[in-house]
View 1 (spheres, rainbow, N blue to C red):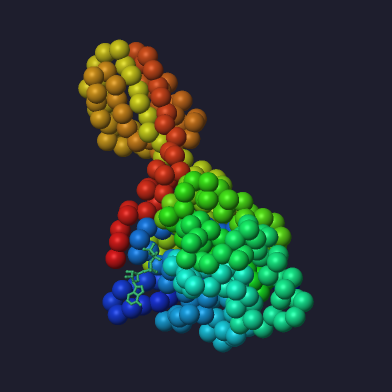
View 2 (cartoon, rainbow, N blue to C red):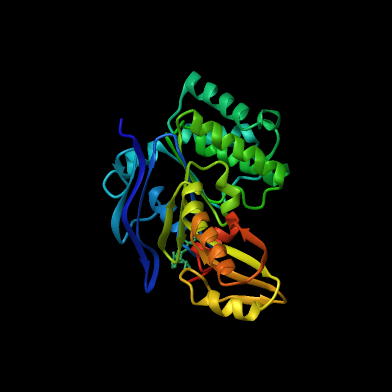
Length: 312
Ligand SMILES: Nc1ncnc2c1ncn2[C@@H]1O[C@H](COP(=O)(O)OP(=O)(O)OP(=O)(O)O)[C@@H](O)[C@H]1O
């Protein structure tokens, strides 16, 4: 069994002039949760639909458990559970009937079907709702049921398109726990969101996409570390702040300084050592530095810095 379970290889999908997915490549190892993050219209759903064999690439290919979505869509479908961003549920059937229908559609029979159904109801916490009609379920419960539907044939790979959107905080935490547990049981999961912080805790790695292009991939820590080279510094001097700001601006790695009283605020590109060198240099130039504050970028800042928020 290969260690790579999901792979996008130079994937392209154009709709007329819109480059919805524009040369995207990445791979996800077996048992990992990969967060696919980007603003509206970035190309997440389009790539996920191609992985789920609901659409074809204009160019390039994608692989699920080693099988090509272009050449072996049937084999891909058997290995994959897809949860679209809006999942149709039938209002007048109950939860058990709904799941049973999809178990049958996936070819499960006899005891195997009954056992799988029981397990899915139990795992998704919907056992107590088994006999209840879907129309009375809360949004959180519907999402659990939809996750159950995607899980019913015990797929190796799960593709979840914004499953947390519209959920309350408690339901989000529950969803996160279920996804982590599925990964711990060996499933490989691709999950999308607009919000990096929503996925950061549960993902082994993330990919940030905007306007069809992958801007960054790696663990959240790696992406944060790369970007952490950019930090905001606030330096307070006791006098001559204007002059100090002018001198600072001429230094490498210093963005345009803003002056607020005796305080100078600027973007600084460098590690802790170069920050210490910068302060020593200021002191060496005769400025009396009374305070230095370094703001590390939050995950949201990192996301905003990577993407420009462009929508096509
Ligand atoms: N069938 C289609 N025909 C034409 N354009 C499309 C089609 N599907 C998607 N697009 C366009 O492709 C781009 C990417 O859309 P996509 O739905 O993949 O983005 P997304 O990242 O999933 O966004 P959201 O977070 O809003 O769901 C958008 O500009 C969208 O309008």
